[in-house]
Length: 110
Image 1 (spheres, rainbow, N blue to C red):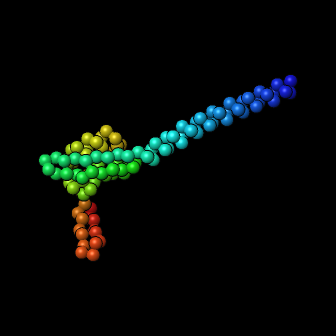
Image 2: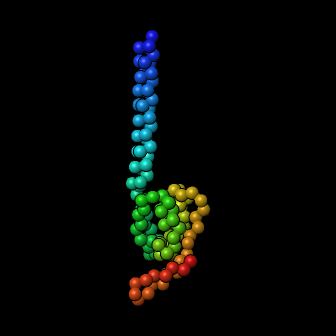
Image 3: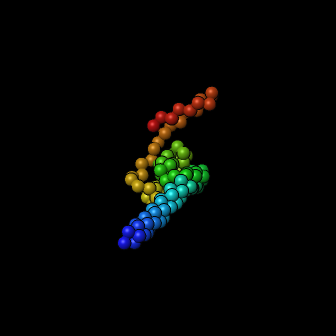
């Protein structure tokens, strides 16, 4: 009877260990996939070019889509469409004035 009880506990522990292992692998795979995500876009609308931009996270991608200065003030409608498909919240383009100084410093005013 004691041998049967010990065997049953060992089997339950083994099953629990296997379940924990596989659930942990899934979490590791999800984390690895999200950290290696590469999101890229580039637009040319009537000669106005955003340039090519790549981001390694969805948050950075969504911020980049909203940046008027990063995108040379171009393709706002197209950027808004990408934002709606991948990002949460409301598309709010940021407008910056950038001043470049002779010494290489930059000043951004929002």
